[in-house]
Length: 177
Image (cartoon, rainbow, N blue to C red; front, top):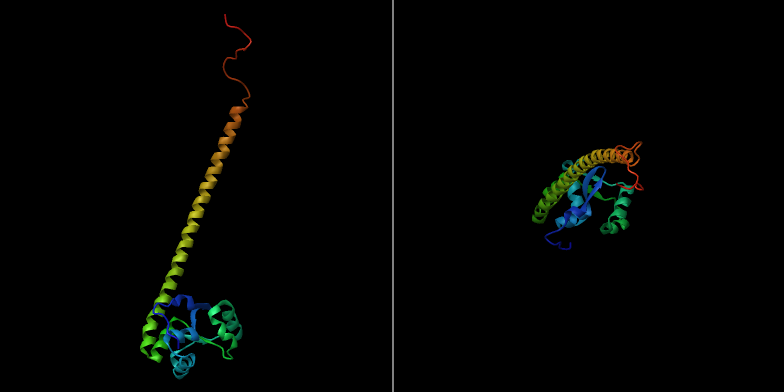
């Protein structure tokens, strides 16, 4: 296996499938420093530790979607096997069944990446709510301002077209004594 830099951006390897945030087996194996075959054998030997909410195999359509969306997974196109994916809990469980120092070390990075992703989604939701509040406030101000402008225009129309003049009118032709 190729040696990964210590600071791997794990978040980029987390995908959204079936409403879950998951990592594909080849990415997880690379992070843990093992071959995909070794990872999947460990999962099969410990199948009771990997229920469907921890790990599942992709369908052909899902595999094709992942290959299309993720450039780094192009090599899967030629694999006859359907890849397995792991949720956050499945990735942690995989580290425990592999039980290598690298797997334990990388599981900490993976957990932190899932947590950061969850926090970003929460912050995004809060930001969206704040923007909605701001838009509503601006809309109220817009309504108030347009009413004010309309009233000012009505008043301006009344003052420029008086129906009668008030006060004394002098004829500019008339001379003063």
